[in-house]
Figure 1 (cartoon, rainbow, N blue to C red):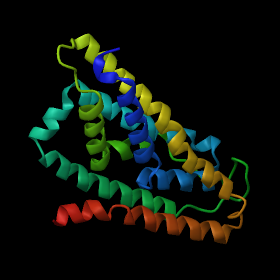
Figure 2 (figure 1 turned 120 degrees about the vertical axis):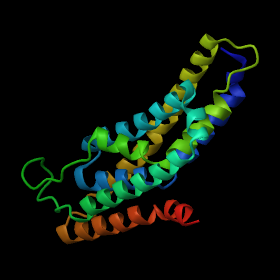
Figure 3 (figure 1 turned 30 degrees about the horizontal axis):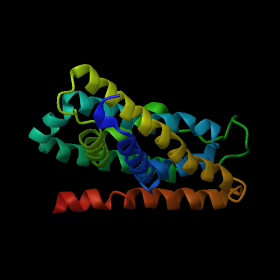
Length: 214
């Protein structure tokens, strides 16, 4: 193992991964909503899309995309605008979602969000890119004298460690949503919940909007 990937650094990475993964945000609000509407099992593509979408970003930044983004900060501005537009579309879709008729997956059942839709949310999220950059710089930076092979091995270990924490952490949101299904079984309650989640999803973009206005 390269020196940069000491046990202390891996422990610190695990703590950082847990805090950033379990804290509220657009992706986790989407998981909560999906768990309520379609259950945990049908939310798994969403879970995997959010997690693998982020881990792909860490890999790309680690392989050289990070310096490119730093040299062209205007890219973050474009990402912010695209992210706001995409989140507004997701919120509109959630608010208009028809309450399920029953717990089966037949007519009237809510349509789950897909893997690519979840990954796109991460790829358009400037905050996710910033976190991925922090992960790469702080935990996968090459040690003095380390070769390219050591760096690649260290980067993959960082990604694996983050995945081991991230996947169960964000899954908690979908599980909580699935647990609420019985409480929100009536169509009118589910409709109100979906509208509330759509509003919260839009509100989660407030820091992005303020950063553009500033």
